[in-house]
Structure formats: C-alpha cells, structure tokens
Image 1 (cartoon, rainbow, N blue to C red):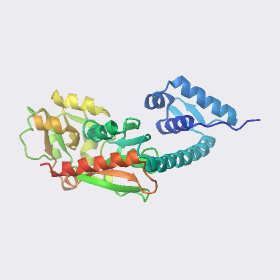
Image 2 (image 1 turned 120 degrees about the horizontal axis):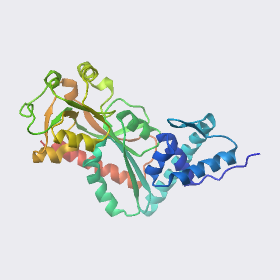
Image 3 (image 1 turned 90 degrees about the horizontal axis):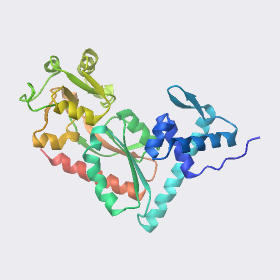
Length: 307
C-alpha cells in the first residue's frame, strides 16, 4: 500500500520543469541540479504514490494521467506559495524571491540583461531565470504560471494575460555591411531569392500576424542554415554566410557600430509588428517581479524614442 509522499518546494519545481521541458537532463540544466538527484526524487515520489508520473519515452519524458493530476496540484501549490511570498515581501520589503522570465532569444542578448542589472544589484537575495522560448511557448508559459513575465510579439491573447507595455518591432533583414543588398533602403522577398538565407527555428510570430507572402517565401526557400541559437545566427551573418530576418532589437549595438546592417522589409503587416511585455492578469506578482516589469517597461519606452 502506498503512503502519502512529502512534497517539498524543490520537488514541486523538479516535477514542473521536467513536464515543461520533457527531459530530466534539460531540467537539471535549468535548475542547476544534478540529473541523478532529480531522477532519484522523481522515483521516490512515484514509489511513495504507487503510481508512475512520467512515461520514459525515447524522445523524453511524458506525463501519465496520474502525473497530469499531480502536476495540476503542483501548479496550484506553487502559485499559492508565490502569492504568499509576494504578500510577505510586500509587508517587509523585497528581501528574497524568484523572478521567472521567458523571452525571444534575441531579447536576451542585450535588452533583458540591461533591465535585470539594476534589480539584481539592488536586491542580491532575489534569484532569476531568463529562458529563450518560441512566441507561442512564451504566452503559454506566463498564462500557465511557468513564468512571471513574457516578452514576445503582440498578438490577441487569453484573459489570463495582460499586456503591460509594447514597442514597434518591424521585421527586417540582417546582413554583413559588405553584402550586395546592404545599400538598399528597403527589401522585398524577391530581393532575397538569389542570396543564402538563415532561419531561426520557431522564433517568428504566429502565421496570423504575418503576410501570406512571407509564409510562402519561407516555404519556398531552402535555407542554408537553420538554428535556434541567436549567437550562431549572429556569427554566420557577420561572416557573410547569409542574411536573416529579425527585428533590430537584439542587434542594436552591432547596427549602431556598423558591424551589421538591418534593412526593413517593405511589407505593411511586418512593419506593424510589436514586441510586448506580458504579465499574468489573474495572479499577483511578487515585489521583485514587479520591479523587473517596471524596469522592462521603462526601457521599452526609452527604446521607442530612439530613431
């Protein structure tokens, strides 16, 4: 007969991260905990419950029905725990806590570190996680309570999300300064047909936000490189091995210094794209998370004033 397992806060976060990432190995990297230790804890909980929480598949870990039931309880527990911490911190001042942020990979290069710097220095006991994710995963993560803050393309969302701030983020073409197209004022997709193109996997907005022409272009080309690493894309573009479609927010320093050139795409809907700062609409942010939201909103407002 199984006994009731003791679920500590650490165990709850282990289960949440494994379910989110689909792998004990990936969860260990995110949590900075040995994979063997996480695996032992999961096995112990399963043994105490007398039920499997995860199916071990060749491609990773998948929740069983029992695991899905437990995870819903885990998320509710973590939300209540974080809300309690927020209330205590609100009474005593920001002393500790954790801030979880999901963002487009390009925003983690320069924009997010600038905003986190002041809060991290002012509150040394606060911990942070800042993870790159696809636009859809960012919105889902904030709505599901897996993160406090999301930075992604503005799109119609569920009532669980609130748009705290946004900034224009037109899509353009990034290239080396000596590229044959570097002197153009704007570009169309036909202009890119004769040049190697680099694609960042799952980093672009939902199909509902982009022109059919762009979707057709992506489907028709044979990209020379496909990667989900912003740093690899940066180095490949800088080396002149291809052009890539990005907003300019993640490359402001290189564009300002002339190391890279960014040219807007002459496509109306792509010129109207915006990057938004999303927070939960139905959960209270901790004081530390609220400070980060304030810093990000301030930086977005300042960026919008730049030429």
